[in-house]
Length: 112
Image (cartoon, rainbow, N blue to C red; front, side):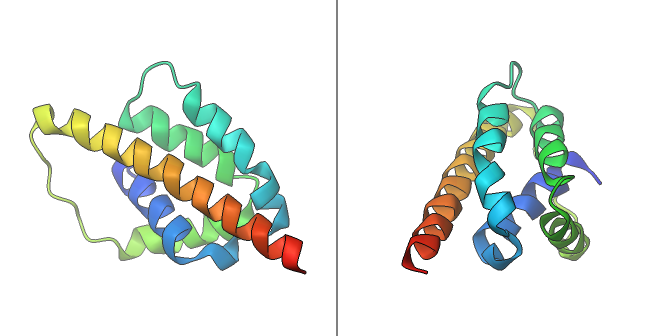
């Protein structure tokens, strides 16, 4: 899977398919956030690798990402100057969406 598509697919799954995140995945979100925060060099490849290493232990999330990736149409290449901003924006959006998901799921568990 191409790093760009993996990031896009994972973000889309977080935003639209929260049901694939079971309790174990939700409890493991802090480790993903920590790994993302600790990236020394923010590149598309390093961001994608952090996601890949996290979801490998969460089968339902991994499967949803793989299916979503297949559905994503080919993204046009942007010029290198704008790729850096795009990566920073994706990183920020990913962090925010993962936090929203964690907060939502933990709120649902408190209600149960």
